[in-house]
Length: 442
Image 1 (tube, rainbow, N blue to C red):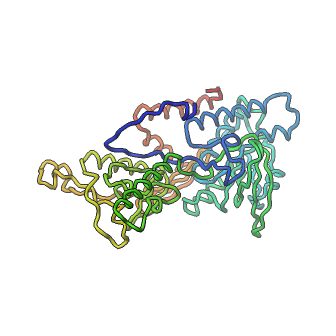
Image 2: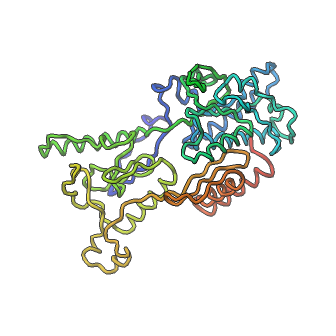
């Protein structure tokens, strides 16, 4: 049910770690018609369940013998994914693999629907050169008769896919997607979504001219960016109210708000992950919901790698017994002394506790969080992936194709939280390889 129907429980805490993450951009103020009623988001487990059911619903509906118009069947089997970052590209690859499996396409026999020598931003060209996938070698599959009518379209607002990757890998991603039949529309933005089966795109040609074109489809998946969840905004507002009250009580004339340090609605934290403006230092924030501010701070990407390293850092900070609420920092050049605290320290070790000093290896004062960039991976479908491996700012190697896929899967398994989940993931991959995809309803 809704939050209004649920019981509200008040909890007191000694320490709060906030890691609520972000949600998908779902505001119809920015793009008319953008809502969960018309599109599928890729954020929560419920989103995944709903999306799975919707894909199967589309396949079953398109299989009905009452549909005698081929154009109607093509509309039903047109899947549109908006957003060409890692989330959108990986889902496009996975969806294309799923459709190929349930429609009986044998690996290596896919027929590309890309239009070589023509602009990938022209919807009409892609529609006219769709090329029904007849003559492709097939195996027994539940929806094999739907293969000639299926389209998967990836919409990118920029000229290239995956802006986080190096140029060569971005080009490889586009080529691999098109080689497996995905229609890639670059320099194309969604202007409005009329309903769950129709969206209007603004297409920019090579001359920089824009024109609106429509796509009728069976399913729209939105992976076009994120925004802070409502609770994050509430926390920032509460901190603003508290800081304003404290500044007025001390007679401070120039009122400064915590929100003035925020970036894109993220919670401002210091280098030790403490929310600024909180004198007790007992509220920490990390992951996608937080942004480090202050002298020498760098805005980090909103990725799982950053969140995982921050989580491990906060755990060490707490396990080592550092005091999070020391005295406030004296005046600095920016005049931000009322918002920033001194570095956390272990009081017992400072007072001469030898056991604590040895346990902390002499680090009686906590070091600030430092992000170590290990690279980025992305699956693009067809058993191929991109691997950009680095150590900090030093690039180790870039790899696209089957080797990249092997590395991607290895990291995927290793990052599972337990041996049990690793075995379950490996078994699921093995089962899918032998028996094909499961199309039963959840």
